[in-house]
Amino acid sequence: MNAELKEQYVQIIAGKRVERDVYLDEGLQNDLLAMAREMKIPVETGLTMCADDFYEGQMRLDGFFCEYKPDDKFAFLKKIHDKGVRNIEMESTCFASMTLRAGCKGAIVCVTLLNRMKGDQVKIDHNTYVEFEERPFRLVTAVIKKQLGY
Image (cartoon, rainbow, N blue to C red; front, side, top):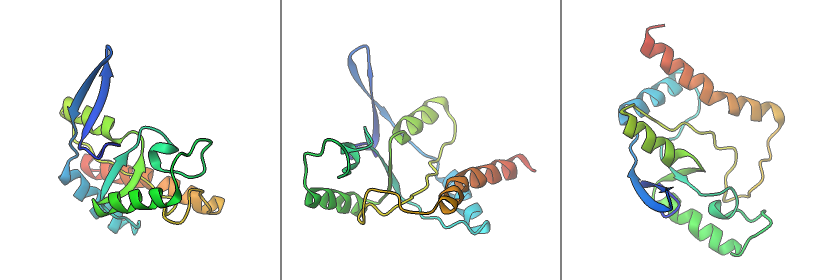
């Protein structure tokens, strides 16, 4: 889902807006989910919202510019949560569009480091951060190895 809450990737080419379909493979998602459970990696499935930037596009309150109020932030986060969004980042629609165009299976694997309803700053210790950061690599590597027969 893009920042306009649409299931599309918007790209500007030669000054013109190009809207591209996005698609992620449900079978690959299920493989990742099964492997995560097998590896005892906590996991939740849902939509990823692809924001255009790190601060205002994600409704952060801690950026230099912030022209909305906390109530606006929380109302928007609730709205997207109700639509199934469980993560916000900035590359997923491009990835989903490119893999679709290339004819490759694609899935998004992200780490959620904080609950945005409770704040915008990551407040976990370094070791926990490293553990969380490594989980997607371990998970994706395990799925690739399994698919290759290793």
